[in-house]
Image (cartoon, rainbow, N blue to C red; front, side):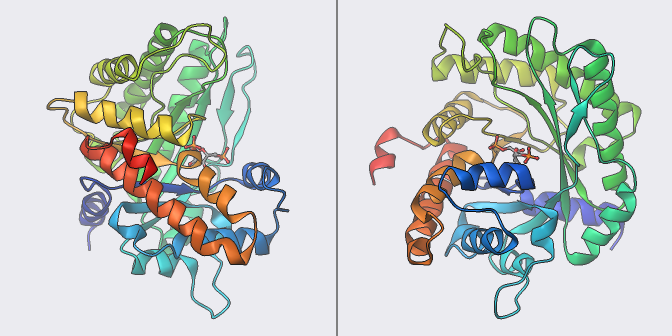
Length: 340
Ligand SMILES: O=P(O)(O)OC[C@H]1O[C@](O)(COP(=O)(O)O)[C@@H](O)[C@@H]1O
């Protein structure tokens, strides 16, 4: 298969109406933090048990088209020797992989961060592809404060994101481009709008400079929201409206899908806001869906508590959240469905 057809068929498998992505790619520090909340130690064994629980959830493929895995998971197998990646494939779920190496502070940029991981990326990607990954994900983070993000921070981050995307496409892996504007802070929704618009403009300029084919990538953005310590709140209609206006101004129609991250919203908020976005999207050119980690997994972790006897209940919870988010993709979610 040519690189072009590989990219095309992965996009076709990922961008499906009523389906979204499960982000199960928490880095070691992040998964340790999530496990700590349920008093489970993060070890290779506990991470395998948990991620096996996620991937073996019966019927998950009805609502999930792709899963983002962490590098370690790509090499893990069940006790009877089946690779976890194979389980995803058998569920009809496309396996992908997080390939960035986390953030460091960017010199001379007032505290802005920049994401690392470009060195040796092509070799790593070839290896992941050989193991079965068909898409990749890279996350940049932008903090909002009186001084951040700086133009320097936005430019430097856009450049690495575009270089990553170009390398992925050259090897036949679909890149998910994730510029996350963080929820931390007391900023207003208007300020988040302005920053998100500037960030995405810088990203799409860089993607253009690096000749990234927009038809064969997905955008994983944050929604436009007031900061979590903001004195002002915003209604779901306002969030949906501002998110859509911002996206229309920044994201070319050639991009096939936009899969939001949850970013610290509660599971219910993330589902409700996605539903409003889809009901208000009109004839938006992109499929608007989800690529949630916390908003899908928080209730699962609570139900699991690290205990084998809770696996079935935890899987029911994942199935339910995936189903509700699928409804939100179709604009048919209602708060009553939470009680079912
Ligand atoms: O561990 P990291 O690299 O900080 O990433 C944390 C998470 O951020 C995400 O990009 C988005 O997650 P949320 O939906 O919880 O905001 C996930 O894909 C990833 O697992």
